[in-house]
Length: 130
Length: 335
Image (cartoon, helix red, strand yellow):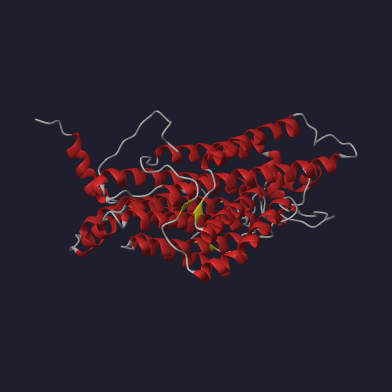
């Protein structure tokens, strides 16, 4: 169904590329909002990697009609990664909500959403007063 | 072939996100990215995950846009961002990071184990052959996360409770007491109100459909809960009043969480749904529907509380009071 690039399956190589793109975004972005979005991208890459492991052979969804007799289970997508990733998506949105809340508290304190001015202000605050 | 084209667009959208300079553009590209991700999941044979991704990404985008609109733009965050972008930037600073990332990626690909084309997966065969008689229902994904691996669902529910509590405790609370029945600042247009009034009951019906049919078709508790939370948001858009009590919602969420713990203990750990007697199918269906409804209610309450914390309660105070930050541990003034 889906081919290979350089000996590695397409559903493996694209999530790896996305993972490192988002890693690059995290270490180079100046805006904290963009960093949080890049964390979400990283999580999406991991989720697609897992789903791709279960959909190598066939992509028939694991949902059946009444009275279906399953002849060949290998022709159906693996339901276990799907169930795990369904849980991971909900946990991801919980983590994102906490991230946004912490960012709001930081913005309230430092009045900026950028890394560098915030760090500078934090270092100034930590200096002992002479 | 379609999946490969979609994957290429996926990567391109991600590169747009990483290279975008304005926060709004990041959010719009993120919406496009999530849409493509959802379609890819659907093509990989995972309709449940695709629907969850679509709903979740809509909520995340709403949270981000509300925060950007309500806080950062007023306090000068976006302005400051534009100013920094207007300055000439030293592009050579990025090159070491780029080289580092490319090196990591090449190392990862080089040392990745080569997977065989056909993976012998006995667990998948076991699940697919046995789930209809073991747990019941016709959806293998629901059977796994409510039957075989119900521990995962328990801890996921616990994590959502913890996230809601953390969000409520971490948000600011000097001006945050919601007086019941307060009207929102923004007046919605009449067209929005009219459209929402038609859509609202449909969303509620759709959520109930998803919950009740979660074990025989794509859907389930998470998606039904998201639809219920969407109903609450639409109701807010129609009425423009914050009249739903947030404390009761949090208490109800904790109550539903206790029920989520109790029901599998009664049903699975005592083995009621596994015993081969005549009424087993009935018990299985009751268990699956009740569990889906509980998970849906829990997700709905959690997202409702998050939505109210972000949209209704948290507001940036006026310019004079902006520098006052107080975190208290007393816990009385929080809500």
